[in-house]
Length: 199
Picture 1 (cartoon, rainbow, N blue to C red):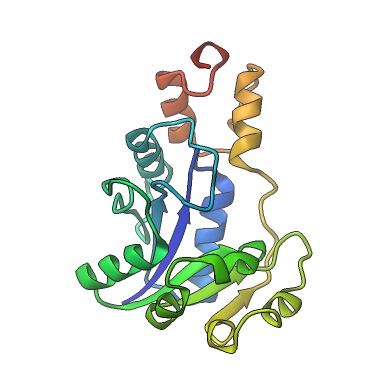
Picture 2 (picture 1 turned 60 degrees about the vertical axis):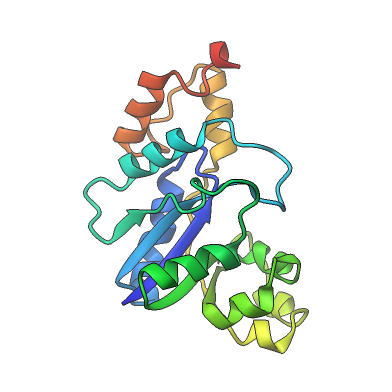
């Protein structure tokens, strides 16, 4: 089996995430893309607005009707910091296969800072979406050969939306139906997530 791992805060998950997953499935000929809502990411200082269970439930809602997409709570059930190396190692142990970690091209710059990056590169490859007109070749030239050789790139137009933009729109009382799957919009409305009165 060939798995793609799409990690993120998913606060909330949106159509842009699903678009990336579908492109990765097609371009990398994957059998399945697993969404992995982040636990405590040591490289991010801002904590999620929604709780772990809420983000997991929104991801489940987002992939309704998508048989090649799934959600894992592997990072949400861990206490303390979570690292991609530990996540991939545990996923491979539970579900042996060929793993590809899906990232944005801008994330490639931070790979040398990742925990146990050399060992992680031995467990999976990286698929970088060439977004925001970043020159992936320039970034790869700054990485060690061991890491750079494990990177494949995907050039594809991405949906211009972000979770922060969605949260800001909701705080202003605006509708977000065009940015998220209907089931996610319904969940957010029922839970009163990101609304002004919840801040």
